[in-house]
Amino acid sequence: MPHEIDIKRAQAFARQVFGFYTGGIVSLLIHIGYKHGLFDAAAKGPATSAELAARAGLNERYVREWLGSLTTAGIFTHDAATGAFALPPEHAICLTGDNRLNVAPVSGFIPHLGKVVPQVMEAMRDGGGVPYSEFRPEFTELMDDAWRRIYDDALLGGFLPRVAGLTARLEAGARVADIGCGTGHAVNLMARAYPRSTFVGYEIAEDAIARARAEADAMGLANARFEVLDVTRLPAEPKLDVIFAFDTIHDQAHPAAVLKRAHDALAPDGLFVMVDVKGTSDVREDVKNPFAPFYYGVSLMHCMTVSLAEGGAGLGTMWGEKVARRMLAEAGFPGVEVIDAPRPQNVIYSARP
Ligand SMILES: C[S@@+](CC[C@H](N)C(=O)[O-])C[C@H]1O[C@@H](n2cnc3c(N)ncnc32)[C@H](O)[C@@H]1O
Image (cartoon, rainbow, N blue to C red; front, side, top):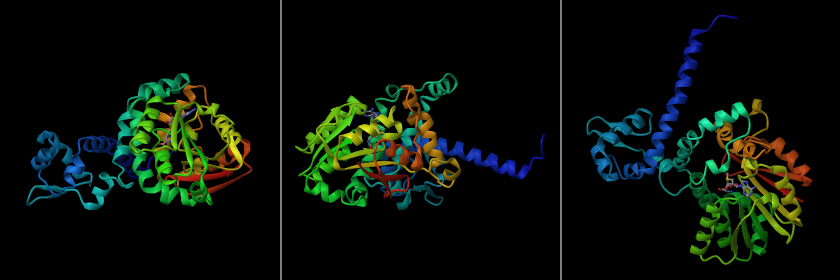
């Protein structure tokens, strides 16, 4: 052995590792609870396992075991006198409801990404990646569910006003595209809020486009349309005034080509608005970011590998500000403003052609 082992330090590290495993199992149980409506049922008030099982229409034995894990994990409290389990209101707001603090939907990524572990391991050894098709159709629903409330809560009043001049342009009437729009909820919200502007959402996934169109129809929007398009082929004409890229550049197979296309499609006074994951492009700096292990991990299991599967750049979710600035400059954007997003996981890049 090169040097003596500090046994206390080793034990502390082993506990830390076990904490990761605990987080993994608890994440699965959060997912189960979210999907079975157990948090909604619990938010109605303290309940014994039998009462909660009855509220949710589930088997008491399973619910009791589930409560055992989530109570010892600190999510529920337990009253020994009454036998009731309670979800404190501060916890309920993070696991139920239509506000963006509800992080329960994110738990779905854990079992979803778990399914591709064998393929990721294979790619790690043999090269290549796991294609997007392996993640569909669940990925479409998961992304929608993870971001829908954030858009509802924070797009119009949070993200957009942070970009100088953006809301005035949208109000006045602008030609707008959202590239890699997923299920199009951001487009539909903006189209409703800015009736003088016209919006198009581009996306490669047909199932996502079908959902986007259905929502636009249900909302009665005449100024939003959606097209299946690989945005490496984004047309340069007719020119656009604003192009959005929400959480999509880092998992592109060919991000440099997409940025160049976005640049070339903008009118001379146009605006490119890219919302992406906050990172520094330097793992030594990223250690200060509490979200970094999650996003590097999601990158390995999804964002990086879907890009590498197509022989792409494999930028990764944590490509970060330095790389983004360089790539935007290479695409032809002379200046880039980097703006804090209304949530700490993200950053907004605003660039003019
Ligand atoms: C992480 S998701 C973000 C979706 C959406 N913007 C949102 O905020 O929920 C990235 C999306 O980019 C799409 N995408 C990836 N490469 C694309 C390409 N070359 N052309 C069009 N869409 C693409 C994916 O299908 C996926 O829906």
